[in-house]
Image (cartoon, rainbow, N blue to C red; front, side, top):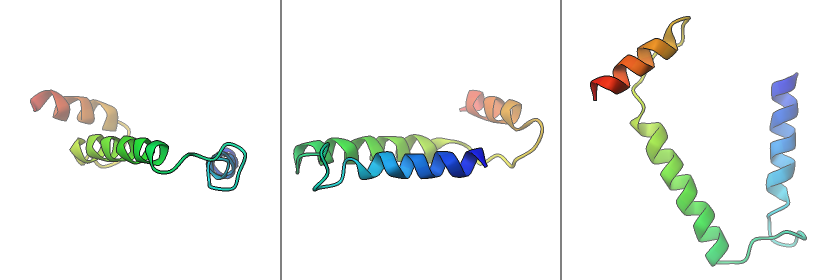
Length: 68
């Protein structure tokens, strides 16, 4: 239930910044900043080692990142 509420509220927050809304981002400067942040985040996510879910996944992830 909390996950669905978070998804709906996040979507509502994202809609606020679309063109035509009161807090719309100005093209192209502000949208380029958003795009660059998305790319930086994607780069960091893709650098994470692939660890399967489990009770000790956090320890496995920490050990795998220390090996790099």
